[in-house]
Image 1 (cartoon, rainbow, N blue to C red):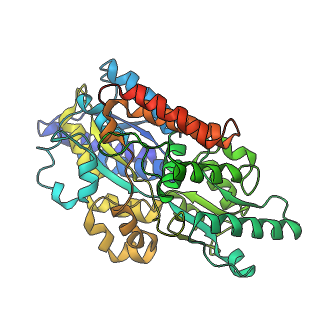
Image 2 (tube, one colour):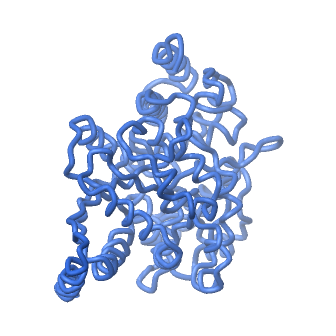
Image 3 (cartoon, rainbow, N blue to C red):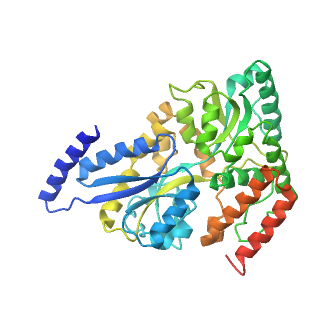
Length: 421
C-alpha cells in the first residue's frame, strides 16, 4: 500500500509541477503511543496524493521529556531538517520564538477550535501551534471485578485504595498472583508531574506553581496526597510502577492484571479493541477527589502542530498542518485512537458518538482540565516540572517523607524563580 501511495503521490506531484507549483519534501517529527503513528501515516499518504508533496515521519521516543530535549537541540541549532513539530500542550511558552506565527494563516478556521486549546497555544498574541487533539486522563476500572466483589465505583482516592486492596487480595486468593489494584505513570518524567498534580490538587493542595507565579506547594494537603500515593507502591501497585510510563501501565491493565488504572484517552480504544483481553469488562470514570470539600482534578493534555521558523518549506508545512487538523482527519483520529478532537463540531458527529462513545462524554472533562503551570513559569517550566517530579519520585520511592521533600521542593522552586519567572 505504501508503494502504491508513493506512486500515486509521484503522479500527483507531476501534475502539480505541470501547473507551475512546486512539490516539496516535508518532514514531521512525531512521538506517539497506541495507533497514533498508523493513523498519521495514512493521513500523510492521502495528503501526498492530493498535493504532490512528500512527507517523512521522524519518530520519537515515548517519553515527552526525551522528546523535549531533542526538540531543543534541533531548534537551538536552527535546524531546517524538521518542518512540522508535534508539540506537547505545555511547550508553547518555552519554544514560541522558534515557530511561525499561525494567527494569520489560520484566521479563517481558528474560531472552529475549542477555545481553551487555542488559548493554550497562544503566547503574547502569537499562535505558536494549531491544536491537533486534546487529552485528559480517566480512572479506568474493571467493571466486572467491581460487580463480582460487590464494590461501587470509588469517588475518593482513599475509596479507590481500599477497593483496590480488597479486590486484589480476593483475586490473588483465587489464584491470580499477578493481579494488582492500581497502575499509573510513576517513572521520573513528565507523566509523573501530571499524575502528582492531580493528586495534590484533588486534595486541595493547590498547584505546583500558582497562576500568579507564587509558590505554595509545601502544605499539609499536598503532603497528605503524596503520602497516600507512596503507600500504593509495593502495595496495591507493583514496585515496578516507579518505572512505568503510559504504555507500561496500559500493558498491565489490558492484560487483565489490574483493577484500576490512571491513563489518557488513547488507552480506551486499545483496551476496547477486539484483541484486548479486557474488552467489554472495563469502564471509565473521572479521577477521584480527596474527600469532602474537594474536587477531582484531571491534567490538561494534548498535542499541537507547529511550523518551524527554520523550515525551508513554510507554506507547504502550513498546508500540512491545516490538512492534519481538518474535520475528516480529526473524526478519523477520534474514532480510531479515542483522541478527543480540537474541532468543536466533531464532538457532535453521530459516527463518532456511535463508534467511540467515550469522546462526547469526555468533552466536559477536557473543557475543565487542569493546566500545568507552563504559562506562569514560562521558559523555566521544564526545570520546574523536573524538580517537582523528582521530589514526588523520591517520596514514592521511600527516599524521605512527603513533608521533607516538599520543603526541599519549595526551596528549589524559590531558587529557580529568583526575582521573577
